[in-house]
Length: 505
Image (cartoon, rainbow, N blue to C red; front, side):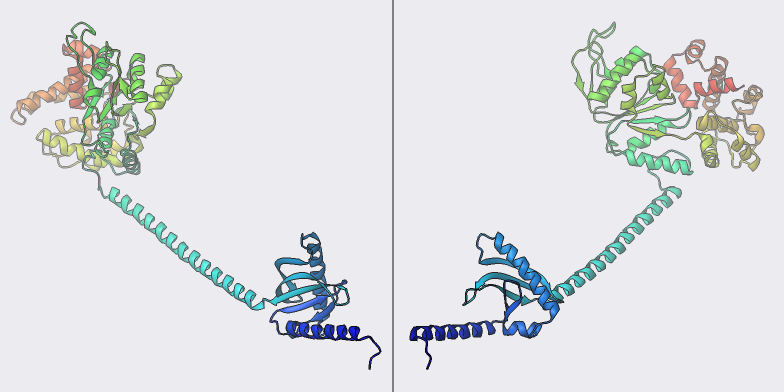
């Protein structure tokens, strides 16, 4: 029998029993359990820990546990509850991924131990890796499919552009398109018109005289959302400045002599629609201020009035004047220039698109042979070559005038080089004199056509004689300036083209 007192023997037995029960309990746990001493050496491993890492465990495993133990001790010191660290932390024990939590543990003999409750998460990590690879594969597949869709969409856009280009080349134009020519510059011009016509922004059409600015304005209006609304055209150079203001903005009763009642102007008449202001570069400073008010505020003030009147009008302006240069010379307001030049449509000169000359010649020959009842059906290559070498200072209008004259003077069904009478040709006057042979026209043309032909030639010669001065020509012919402008437009005559041709001689 033991010499120890009975209470001590009983306490020792109880401790042994509790220790055995405690170890049995830890051994049946599926988690790995480690007890680490104060120097972080392994004091105890349960059955799950031994099954995973072996007993005794390898040096790399022991070193990993020592590092983990030191880290846990630092966290427990910072924790408000020193005995428990409720954080679950992932780590590597040698090459095995684990997650663990820790707590302080007091042994039966009072030693300070650290308990680690650990799980092997190798399987979970494998699943995560497989899932990551799967997601990466899905992303790769999606990126590939998206790339294919983008390439397909790009191809669709490319094909669409090619179809549109082919349509333009084949002449699939808007029914209101009266412009002649399929050159690259004309295709670009049409594309520009269709891009901007749907907006309500102010458009400034620029280009040399005779390039067809009015045709562009017509197409802009026809392809806009205001096509079914009113459309008025005003030649700002053909109306006296004071009359132009009253014509555009209207006037109040008593505003001037003869103003016996209020009259609304063109801007109010065309409200909701479009107004085309040709030769905008020639308006006076006073008109520039009035027009600026319309563009800035959408309102006009009648002549003699004080109350503004709201209007909703889209403005299309045109000029052959270099407005930027006019601004520098203080002849045109900078603020008005910016308001007008929101969208600029620049029309190419005829010398920039000579590939359109053949089509233009065919168009004008067909038009004037019907107008003059002439059976012209052929233009030889020599005549075409002569047209292609000309510089065309008067642009399309000059070409139209030339073909008009050629159809008139042609004796047979063919237009020869001799029939091409250029405005800057020194022999032009002599050739034109031959047209005035009435014997050739009697029985071949009705009186109205002969009179129209002679009227056109008289006006043209008068403009040439007075160097394109419309006011002087109107005075000499004893007709109104407005009537003269109407006739010039009817016969395709341009005072500015005549001025240029006279200077070139």
